[in-house]
Every structure is written in structure tokens, then in C-alpha cells.
Amino acid sequence: MNTDAEEIAVRRADERDVDALVEFNRAMARETEAKELDADILRAGVRGLLAEPRHGFYLVAERRASGDDTRAEVVGSLMVTYEWSDWRDGLFWWVQSVYVSPRLRRRGVYRRLYQHVKELAAGDASVRGFRLYVERDNLVAQRTYEQLGMEETHYKLYEELTRS
Picture (cartoon, rainbow, N blue to C red):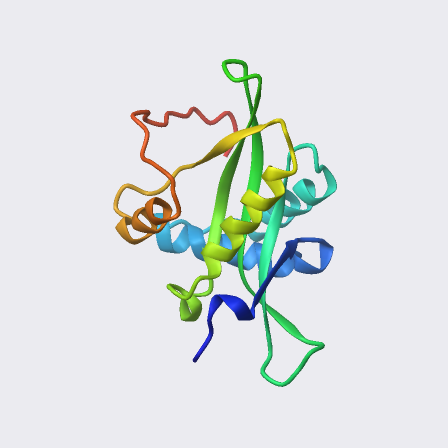
């Protein structure tokens, strides 16, 4: 398959992308944490974000079918959520739920998605930067993030769940 980043279009996700976003999130959880996510809860969560843009947004990367200008296949996605920083009087955009179809990895799909995030942020004076978390053992992803200008921080992430 000869796909490069120029064949990939990025747009904000909408209701027509729910099935792809649910499947991508389920696949990512299986790959990174060996977790099986409940599809109904996940579908409600995806729809919840789409319905509440104040919480964030999804982007999807589409690849046009060869010779077909009307049909596009969703091949990657990410979610952005917001964190207010009182230290910087602005927002950090958290990049989460990153997924690229396995057959198109290492072909610039994530690069295009992240480039689009940066372009959107450039038009929003409240954005101070981007953050994400990555599995400790996912060295390929870590190298990708570093190549795109991100740096590892000295923070560890802690959590306490009130509901699963």
C-alpha cells in the first residue's frame, strides 16, 4: 500500500464517525492495556463528547479510496480535551485516544492529525500547549511524539476512579 500523508485529509469528527471512534478506542485499549472496553459505555462516551464541545473534540483522518472521490475511509483519530492552567492563564489541550489503523502506521497519519491540532490551536489565543500520556513501554509512540516536538516531562500520572 503506497499511502503517504498527502492522501490523508483531517476533519472534526461528527455523528457519522461514532462507529469508527468506538472501534478505534476498543482496539487501542486491547493493544495498549489488554483491556476489553464495554461498547455501550464507550458509544455513550463518544456521543457525549460530540454533544458537548466544551469538553473537547475528536479529529479523524480520512483516506480516499483509490479512484473514488466520494468515498473516504476513516484511518485514524484522536481526541482533544481541555485543562485549565492557572499558572499560565490558559488551556492545555490533552491529546488522547490516539489510534491509527495498523496497516497505515508509520506513514504520516498521526503527523497529519497532530499538525491539524496545532493549526487549530494557532487560531485560539487561550491555548498554551499540548499534553498527552503514553504507555511506558510504547517506545515507537514516544519516538513519534519527540520527533514532532514534544518533550517528556518529569511528572508521573496518578488517578483514583470513582466509577469504572
